Image 1 (cartoon, one colour):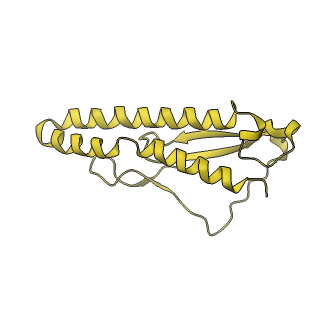
Image 2 (cartoon, one colour):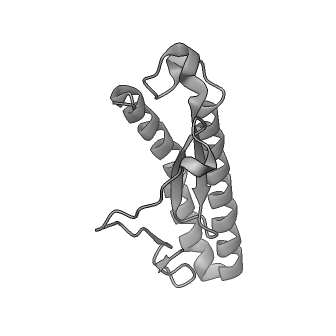
Length: 137
């Protein structure tokens, strides 16, 4: 296998911890602010989402690009450990995040796009009035 399972599980736990950090306090603050002043609640939601997305992106980058070969999640020989990279992206509302695995060993002409059916369509949004579920394609 290309991925080291133990390191991937540790990576996933850390990303989930970063993304869920402060959610309880955010829910409490949003609940109060919705009754007092809705625009401030929306502003708070955007600022905290942006901060969590930036923290997650920095962590993904540090795991992918700034780590030693023995710290990466790939099972490759030491001289070729920088062949793969990770990139974190989000939808414009920052409710759906995705991690792209980049293979720097391939050229643009080597890529073949074949959607595997059935496929999972990830819905963005948080189900609230101001952020309904939607397909972001």
